[in-house]
Amino acid sequence: MSNAYKNAGVDVEAGYESVRLIKGDVKKTFIEGVLGGIGGFGGLFEIPKGYENPVLVSGTDGVGTKLRIAFLMDKHDTIGQDCVAMCVNDVACSGAKPLFFLDYLAVGKNYPEKVAQIVKGVADGCVLAGCALVGGETAEMPGFYPVDEYDLAGFSVGIVEKSKITDGDRAKAGDVLIGIASSGVHSNGYSLVRKVFDLNSDSAKETLHTYSEELGKTIGEELLTPTKIYVKPLLKLIEEVGINTVSHITGGGFIENVPRMLPENLRAVIKKGTWDILPIFDLMQKKADIAERDMYNTFNMGIGMIVAVDADKAQKAVDCLAEAGEKAYIIGELTEGENGVDII
Image 1 (cartoon, rainbow, N blue to C red):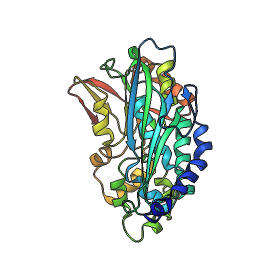
Image 2: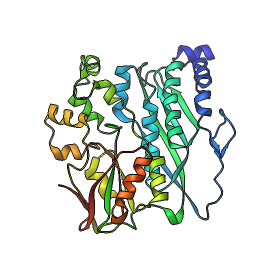
Image 3: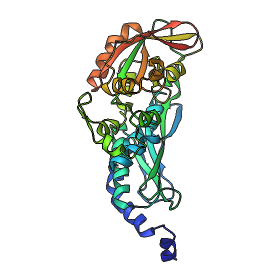
Image 4: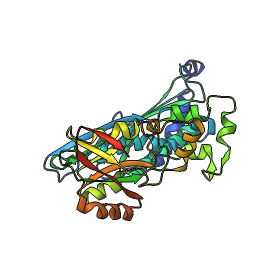
């Protein structure tokens, strides 16, 4: 039967080898609360003690079409961090500490070494987030995906004390907005990125390996820069300074995501020129003549997370984030008005 299955395109032995190769990376993510090992039918995790009214917070996401860059560059060891980041950053926006993560990897053909590279990126992301990789699935799907392509998605669960949930209720007019720097494009807007650089053409690989003076690296290296994981700096900020609301700047950029962190009676005013817009965004805007609003409605523009704090805590917040290794800027404030955002 195994030979028949292999003849149909699914190599069970390659699956066993993939599991063997990833065991070490998975184990390095194990934290207190993990029960059992690798290979069970379910990932077990014990809810931490010390919570009076614990609330579980979940998030799921994928990497999106950034995967196309990984295929073209044949570089697969960082894309897993993107997957983790997209989930755990969302979870942390509720003030929650991510506990565990699971991934789903669907491949056209199981190349164990490639699978190991992908999962290594996932494990690296989990270490950065302080959560455990407790399980996952690698599905070999011949005829559904091309043999050299795959899709990657993930799911995370975190925990927060109910009284400490960050949901925007404490936000008020006069709060100061702090922007935390991004590492690059992160994992949103890549359909537009691919159009800007014509990455569906026969010259895509050549384009990606082209050195850019503006970027100080090749275009491909820049575009594969993994999404920053904000969990530990954000939780440190919550604990040491306190925040009133927070937004993860993902798909939809500033225009869609900033209003999500606000009640109906508050409006965000964000001031251009208060932070460093990364060169990749300037390069894309000029290259494709993209309208400024479209840029802010698609990309993070160099700011991956925005938090609102009491005005008298603004500098303390910036200093706290600097201590955590993050570059942060005072970029605006909250005012009374219809829910929305003005970028002036």
